[in-house]
Length: 114
Length: 116
Image 1 (cartoon, one colour):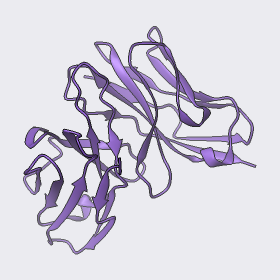
Image 2 (tube, rainbow over the protein chains, first blue to last red):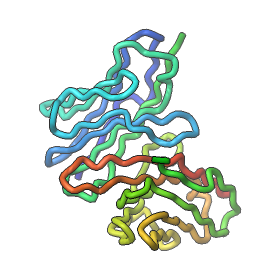
Image 3 (spheres, each protein chain N blue to C red):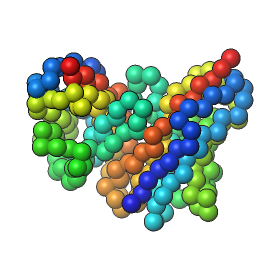
């Protein structure tokens, strides 16, 4: 069965610093991978997704993620953090041919300090 | 494209009462999902519809929970005899369901349930 591990439940960075949020997955077949962001009292918004095309995926708000099969990782990065990036970030996996239900990590809360 | 909507946004109820939530998916999306999210956790899959057919239910969905999507459009999730452990955010998502494509799920704002 597939699963997702997000290392670090809380990450704090300074404004303008690099953001790195870690996600490792477990899957016996090639997965589809997603990053979603959740702002307080709001629903989940898709940041980006990996669809087995390019391994480096660019998303909204300057975020990108790289799929590394050898490391079973899909870490999320942003070169320069902005105060508005403070939110909860979730990594999720699903399988092609499945009912496409998403299996989620526990989330990483990102704080951005001025 | 108006997005996924959920109603109500907040619900406070007493233990033992029944509650019903509604989800309106993006029009022409034929897949609809329900998830539950508790504080500090990621969402957990509850159930999934392809048009009006409920194709999968999680073991998390006890017999007190029932979901319907009668005409393949909006969906309702009912919880009978609520318990304090049911307190959570209930999320609805919809997707196009296009075969052969990565099927992106779009989420509504959620319904926060508090059982006293």
